[in-house]
Structure formats: structure tokens, C-alpha cells
Amino acid sequence: MLCLFFICAFSICTFAQERGAKDKDAIEFVPTPYATHNDITGTAVGVIPMILYRISKKDTISPKSTSGLGAMYTTNKSFSMVAFSQLYFNQNKWRAKVFFGAGNINFQTYLDDESHAPDFYDYTTEVLFFQFQGNRKIYKSIYGGLGFTHINQKAVFDDINRESETVNNAIVLNLQSDSRDDVHYPKKGHYINMDYLSFPDWIENTDESHKFKIYLNKYIAKRETKDVLAFRFAAKFGLGNINFNQQVVLGRLDLRGYSEGKFRGDGLFATQAEYRWNFKEKMGVVGFAGLGTIYGSPTESFDWKLYPSVGMGIRVNMFKFTPLNVGLDGAVGKEDWGIYFRIGESF
Image 1 (cartoon, rainbow, N blue to C red):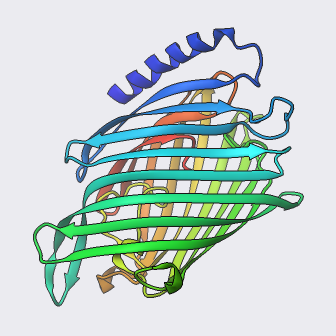
Image 2 (cartoon, rainbow, N blue to C red):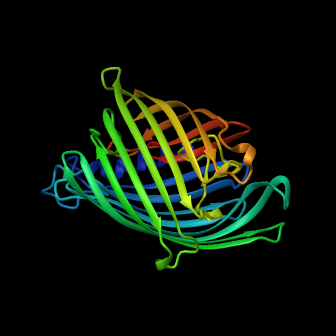
């Protein structure tokens, strides 16, 4: 409730700042607060100042670009900082995104093997990451692009003699199909994103491997286009020597409701559906449910089991001209739960 209070308070301040704006092409700025909680990292607080703008005032076809900064601190002494931009320009023929961040995250994982008794083990990860990707429209709604990702991670376990330090440099090939009517809040259309990430040994990777990520989102307008029914399928899988820091963890976007870090492996598959009910202008609620599975887990008994997720959330549009929501989700999974702060929708 405290987070929602801050959201509403900042929303009022932001609308006051924008009263001088004359049209939908105006620059919009929101100093968005951040607050969430789970049993592992504790309560997290922070701020994410964001600005939405057009790169060229003459370009009315491209969606507004987004840039921002973020800082977060939790009660278990984790902290992170991030800078990001999602850019659209040249009549939406070109797209680019840049992320940079660093942090010190205190988390846990579940181990059950010959060397460790079945239990959760705490670890601390120092991380530095950078990502850049550029995409060009190829044909109609099809975009192709190249990118590069650098992640330097050092995980130190508190209670066992184990340490994992890895350098992951990925060359990224990307293909997108995007027929959404609005990139910030789509009510109809689809978004398909496919990434191939190569971690070759000639660019100083700790382990040579390959990863694939596939996302398929579908949006259907409901109730005279006031509401949205959204579907998502996600697949992530790796080939080669997938190290601890390259593994995927069930949770986050796919699926909400898993925050303990218990279910992790070399790959996952997940599907979910969400109904977005906009009961009032600039306010709404969402309800969602999903199902996922993992494979290649350090705990073999977790492989290929079904993991359900169900939850709901609230949304507030803090921008005057752009349908970009801020909200809070609560979700329950198998023997786990989570609360998630959101800028934009989960998919």
C-alpha cells in the first residue's frame, strides 16, 4: 500500500509538471518511485526517473523513445544501479536499446547433489553488465538486428567453499515480428522476438556456449477496446557448457510467483495469459495465470515438472500522453510467492 501511495502522489506531481504541455508529442518526465518485497531480498526501495520523448519532432510515426536511470537498495543489503534507453527513430525503421548497470546482489539457490545436503544456500553476486542492440526494419513488421552483451559476475557462497566467477560476452542475432498497435500498451497485434546468443571462446568467455530465447506475445482487444486479453509463450534454452551464472531461474517475467531462486536450470518453457481490465481512465487491474517447466536443473527431480502461477495486480498510468503504466503485482507459485513492481506491462 505504501508503494501505491507513492505512485499516486508522484502521478499528481507529474501531471502538474505537464500542464504546460500542449500535445502528445511533448516530452514527459516521471521520477517513478520503486518499492517491493519478498522473503529473500527483503524490502526493496528505490527511484527510477524516466523521460519519454521523440528523437525528431518531425517524426510522428516512430513511438516515443524512453530513457532512464534506476537505483535500488534492499533490507538484505543488496544494491544495484542501471541506466537504460529504448530508442525509435527514422519513421520507426530503426530501433536501438542500451543497458548498463552494476550491483551487489545477495540471493540464494537450492542445491541437492552428492556434495551438498538438500537445502537453500546463500550467495552474493557482484555483477557488471552492458548491452547494446540495433534493429532495422526488413519488411513490413519484420526487424532484424545485431547486438553485444557483456556480463561479468562473481558469485561467492557464504556457507560452503564454493565460488563462481565468469565472464560472459555474447554476440546477439535478433529477429522480430511486431504488429502491435502501440509498443507501450498494445491492445491488438503480436510481438515475436527471437534471440540467438553466441559465447565463443575467442572473445574471452569463461565457457563456450550458445543460448536461444524465444518470446511470442499476442494481444486481443476486449470490451470495445477498453480492455486487453494477452497471451505469452517463452522458451529459453542453452547448448554447450552452461555455467551457473548463465542458467535461467524460474520466475521474474516467466513466471511471476517464484522469487526464491529454487528452480533453475539450462532451459525453461512457460506460457501465461493475462486479462487487463481498465475500469477507469488511467487506472486498471490485471489478473493472470501461467504454467512452466525447466530442464537441466542441478536438482534432477525438478526437471520437466509443471510449475503453476496465478496472481493479480493494479495499474496506474502516470504519463499524460503515453499509455505506459506503473503497477504492482502479487503472485503465488508452487511453494513460493512474489510481489513485483512494474514499469510497463510484464509482456
